[in-house]
Length: 304
Image (cartoon, rainbow, N blue to C red; front, side, top):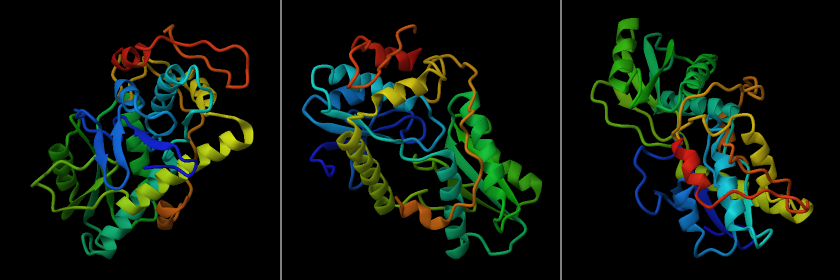
């Protein structure tokens, strides 16, 4: 994919957009190319791309994805200011809530869930990450449940606790007559014969591609107007989490706070088509002083 400024558009992901084992070359995204890990995968993808903009494919539960990508970009573009840009993340927690609600409403519309069925249960499924990211998904489920024609909205974590089969069993024990799996990330759902139905992807290919293009265009406008490559803001955000914070990049679990977690707003379904101490410190391309990290730091940060 090529952005409006003629730059290559690259995507990086973590537990919200990549499977547990990432193949060489990244995970294909129809119509948009591949999603790479923010360390080695991104560095490899940049080798034959002189100018690029990178979009973090997070839905709000992976706050270290952007800072890790910023570290890789800062090193790769250390001698060519403005050639490599970091775009805003694909979505936020508020977007995620709206997109899940829209997916549930589509399931009602398509007959996967009978409208008004008080015994229907929705089981949100996502990859297990670190305890805090997983806990956020339970909070999301609680907020998603509001204003929806279903009685239960539960959570299951692939490769986690509860897993999908256990999540379905819990819904049955609560009294659910039917259980519909709904993705809470961009990772395809695993097969689960115990569930009655599986809803479609959280975002369709056209909507997802449009969102990626929008984020890339926003990064281009930011550079044109303010000479802001996006790296400084991402690095600053990383201070509040640290590389010990897992979120799908590996490492020991460490508590952190989400003081900037947005309150729930009633987003509409149509929103989906709108719009170590060796941590990097970047003040911005226009400032004199910058601290650069070594080339391997991004990968080491993922495995701490």
